[in-house]
Length: 301
Ligand code: CP
Ligand code: NVA
Image (cartoon, rainbow, N blue to C red):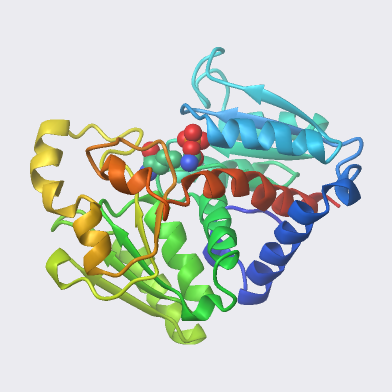
């Protein structure tokens, strides 16, 4: 593993190894106190963040490493100097780059022109750290991930893409339910279907929320992602039938609710569901750190 840009670049074994390592780090943090001893990680963020920024910063600290956060106060990435020069310069001092960007191509450029591992901390196309943490969370509730039935309801976006790849590699049954015109990217769907066929998984796409089948967990994300310019009024009208509420949870007999956060309570999910006993949101948030630390340890030590 040279970089961590997207889950489909992993083999099934590499994904399973990351999940195993994340569990080990979570259970025995003291054994990893020096895993990043003397290493420095630069974090470049073009978009806001709570969970990703804080979980990387504190996670790197727990592994004995040092991290430096760079936001856009010096101007947008690629404006003052090309992204390639940025990557080359940071590689002179740092041991890894964590980047949250608008365009996925910016992250690929950093990986191409830098000489250190690059970790995707969210792009317009993928959110692999989120996906990894989410499968770690599911693994804490289900011994055999290949038997898990996961439904994603809402806008087909970066989080959906990473979940689809993870589910496909792990052989899960994943149902993606989106309003017409808001399906995941067609190429990503084809790649996820290819991986699912290879690993005994199934990927179902539909707009028909009324036909939802039995699920172990239902996952929601915001209906308007960072960088989208859609009007909330238009989106709310179109997405209203896709709200995750108690009626939907009951209909699907779903025990768990998942959300990457930030959530808009009363919009994509009701308070009753997100604050209910089946909600895994804080476990997912905590697992961001353990999952990312597994990636850092794998790439850097
Ligand atoms: N889930 C997630 O990535 O949250 P942040 O945008 O706060 O980092
Ligand atoms: N799809 C959301 C995820 C936020 C963590 C976004 O890109 O804004």
